[in-house]
Length: 462
Image (tube, rainbow, N blue to C red; front, top):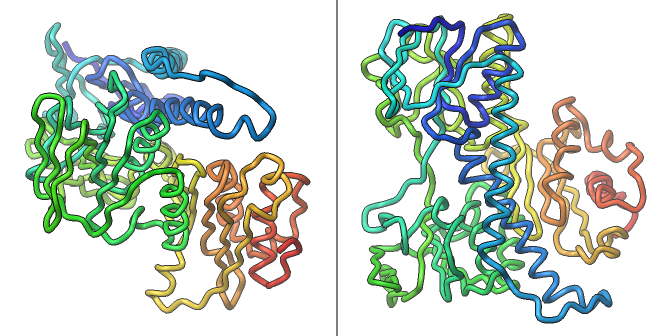
C-alpha cells in the first residue's frame, strides 16, 4: 500500500502537528506519523501539560494550608486525594489530545499510527502491530523531539529511580525525594512533591542552579526555594544511584551517601532518533546526535527536513512550533524565519521565572556596554494586594541606543508578563518605548514599566 503526500511529518508533538496544520492551510496534502496513541508529543503526554496541571493543583493545596488563614479564610483538615489529583491531570491531557485529533480532522490531515522510519527516496515506513504501511511524500519533516537522558551509574529503573515521566505519576508521596539536576524539570517536579509533603533534596554538579538563566535571577530563585523548604547541594558529583526494595541510595563523590525513597533523574534530554533510518536516508547528525540542518531546516538528505528538539537549541515546545511553521512556509512561499534571539522561556515554580533575550552574564562576558533597570514586586500595588511580593523585573538595555537586549522576571505570573517584553523586543523597542506605554493600574505589568523607567533611573515607586 502506498499513499502520496506533499508533506509527511514524523512526530506529532507541538512542532510536528502544528507544521502539518500550517501545511494544510497552505494547500498541501499532509500526513502525520506518530507511534504513541495520544498526540501532542512529550509536551502534552508526559511533559509541559501534565506537569503544569500538577503544579497548579499543588499550589492551591499549599496556599490553603499556609496562606488562606492570613487572608481570613479558614480551611480546616485540608488533605490530598492523590489518585483524584492524578486523574484530573490525566483528564486534562485526554481533553487536549482530543482537541488535536479534531484539528487534524478539520484540516483533513491523515494520521498514521506506528513507528516511522525513513527508507530514502521520499518514502516512509510506518510499522505498527497491525502491520506495515509505506507512505510516499515530496517532503518529509522529522519532528520526533527528545527523551530524558542519564549518565552511567544513575540509570532509571522505571520505579524508584525515575525520569520526569515516572515522576508525573508516582502513586504515593515519597518521604524523601532526591532530584539530580537543578534545571527546569528538576525544580518544577521537585516543587510538586515538596508541596505534597516530601522532603526534597536537589543535587547539582554545577555551582549554581538553573544554568543558562540570568545569574541574578537564579540566585534569587534559590533563596526563595530554600525558604520554601527545598534543599540544595551544589557542586555535587553523583557517582552511583541504586534501589533496593522501597529505598534508594545515592552515592556522592567526597560526601556521605544519601538514603531516600525515590530519585528523579533530571540531567537533560537527548534527541529522539532511535530507529529512524537516518543513515539509510543520508541524514547527518552531529557528535551529540542532533540532526544537522541549514537555515531552511533542510537536512543533508534531499527532501528531508527537521525541526524542534531533534535539531538542538532551546528544547521548548513553542520554539519547535515556530520552526515547524517557518519550515513549511518556506516550502510553500520561499519565506520562513524564526528570531532565535527572541524566544521566551518560563519556569513554573512559585514564583514563576521568565526570560527573553540576553542575560547580563552573557553581555559581561562579551564586554557589551549595557544599562539595567530593576523593580521589585514588593513595591507593586497589585502584588501587595495579592500577596505576591517576592521577586523583581529586570530590564537590560543597550548603553548606546537604549534598545532592549533582555528582560528577566521572577515573580507571580512571570510567564504571562514576559509576552509584553517579547513583543516589544520583536519590534526593536527601547526601554524608553516600554516606559512611555501606559500600563493599567493596579496590575503586575506596571512592574515591567517601572523596570524600564529604572534603566534611566527614573522609576517612580522605588
